[in-house]
Length: 383
Image (cartoon, rainbow, N blue to C red; front, top):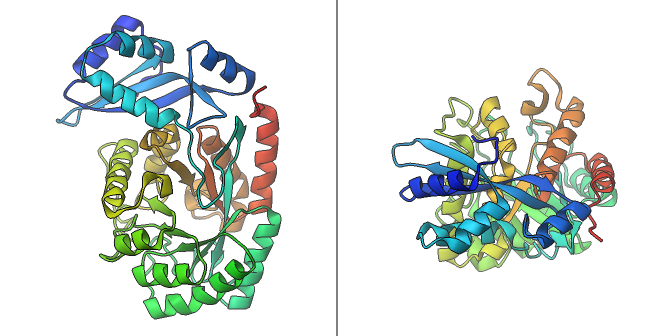
């Protein structure tokens, strides 16, 4: 896509040619601290999802009906001037897209995603109550071990504990609902009773309903509530906030031969459609966080393309979560998962630098330490 700032005339010409295309906006040239505050005050930037970063450039991407993709990078003030002076019907769409990019995100399950102009990255710790998860299968299969691990994650700084009873690693087979319930409910119940913010990681409606009844307050579904016909209704009725993830295929088949016309845009379109479906079912956008699903039906190249385009997904108007922790994308399948921490942290910090508000991780203490240093260097708190 584009990598240079276009002159005002080129931006106007590009938008004229995009009138029949689908338009996407990817914020770039992100700044923080005093520089961000000054740029916003001068009209040269807008806050990204309410801050603490601001974007001074906006990549305009047009995807035409024949699949052709064109892009140009517009300085924010140039784009703003075009909007003010234009009678083009596309100006309304640009306004809508910019509003989605810039408006502050509401709390998610009571957790702030923005605190003034300070970074408020939410860390979700992983508890796999499974014998076959790719990283830690079998380590927390017994309830006592899983509960203890959840407590340890909270003590290390996790704000959410994500409990799952079915592995969704590449090639994994489905688990019977009764068995999944047997695995997760004691863990959910114990941690929720102790006051933890518990997320249930499941693609089965019955598990969602039972876990929420036991105290889970977030539903995290790798199928974006498409796995079962009842899932959307159960999630809507529960009142729980939801994480909608993109996955091409199923865990059993997703890595067989994943294909995309343009991975970042295809994922955007899918998530946009799921947000719309949730809205019709009664799940407001404010209850939704999206996850582009790194490693779920994607090649290494697809993953890289998405990870370099994460700011694009702020255009959905929701919080964005990323889960890269210990995945084979980080260091290759020949490197044991427990040896993938450095690459996991690198990917996490890159995501945070593009505005991602939530990280789903195995290594909570290490992630928290990395975020602390990152925050200090970048001066998230504006004066």
